[in-house]
Image (cartoon, rainbow, N blue to C red; front, top):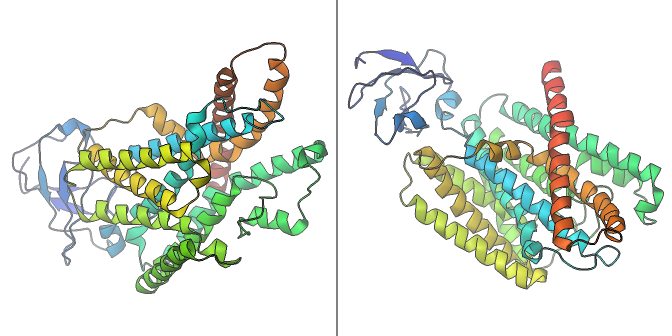
Length: 423
């Protein structure tokens, strides 16, 4: 390939002139080399891009010395890849961990099996901490190029709305139908009209009060708060960063001093996990090569395992800020190392895990309702078919995951397609 050849980088607004160390033949559309330095025509920012697995271990360098006419600054800065398969796999494993945790917790209730069939998964709820780190990471990877861009807030809000609310509303409607058909399941506690509306809005709620309809919705309420603050940063970058910095400082303060509602919700120490993910994303974007990625993986896995073990032994300490932040630091280091390994082709993610990650939101929404219902059925069957508790637990976990995947295929994806067409 001639060094004078100009080509369009697939999926970008960039036109490039190739200056390779050695001539290479591109035969597959979309192939990109190990390192690409995207140098905007009138800027100094250097952005790393993806490495295609077919390139092997060789290091090719393309020098970008021009860009298409009318290409925006946001397009030029937004070239960094954000659809890492390892992040989707992380979502899937986090969802699986939460399902295993809830199945173990429900089985242990006195009215059911009365004991924990899978003690190891006492700490499985830490999948939520992993989710929060991934959320902060993905938001920056996907939207950093939109900072200050006209229409960025509107586009971001629409994407978050269509991703979060339609599946949530569908699940809440299912729960309301179930409660109407089986009033005894409400245990004498009926959600008020205000609580129901707030559940559909995923608005703030006092952390000390039980969720009125969907127990897992407490995480979505925190996600929505983070999205609001992130939107402020997209609108006015410096002002938004100052707001988020102040928010995080008060979240640290809330770990030391008890705050009344609504401050206890807004400044919940768990929100620091979003910031940890954001820091990882900025590190991924600012450098084309992360040295010591295997050390990051080992360190992150070690920290996460340490917090997991502590939570297994002392379950009451799981919600302590230090335990949460240990999970967060572990998830952050692990994510940084795994992204680097995938970027340089040293890690291949099985398609099954990415598919599980695609369905992770639906799994999270659906699983607890399914787990609760099937545990009731399992207790009745167990009177006639005596099997070890762990067998029932495995069956319930599998059913919760399968139900979530079915909801993803039958409800979430069609809703997303429908809304996208009407946009």
